[in-house]
Length: 131
Image 1 (tube, rainbow, N blue to C red):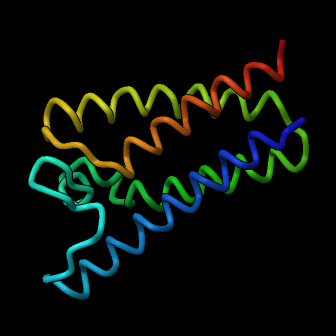
Image 2 (cartoon, one colour; image 1 turned 90 degrees about the vertical axis):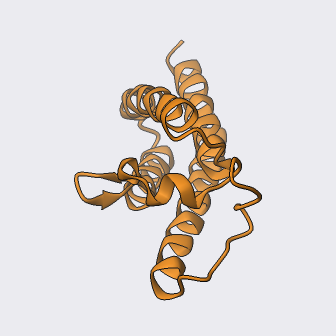
Image 3 (cartoon, one colour; image 1 turned 60 degrees about the vertical axis):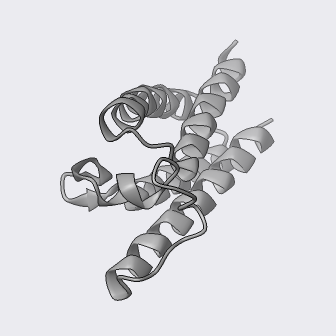
C-alpha cells in the first residue's frame, strides 16, 4: 500500500543528496559546473547560492534529506496520517519556493522543480491512503 510513497521518498532523497553533493563540490571548487547548470536561466546553482537556499542557516538540501528520510520511515511503518500532514506542509512550502524561484530568482532549477513535483505527488498519494 505504501510502495508509491516509498518510491517518491527515495526519489526525493536521491535528488536532495545530489543537490547537497553539488553544494559541497561548489564550496571546494569555485570552477565546478554541475550538469544541471544548462544556461543562465536554467540553473540549479543559482537558487542554491541565493539567500533562499537555506532555511534558518540550514541548506534546503539537508532539510530535504531529513524530510524524505522521515517520509520513508513512516511509509515503512505504515503511518498514513503523519505522511499526509507532512505532505501538506511540503506541498505548501513547494508553492512558496516555486514562486521565489520563478518570480524572484527568475531561474528554472531542474532539481528544485523535480522536488516540487515529488512533493505534490506525495500529497496526492498520501491523501489516497486516507479516503
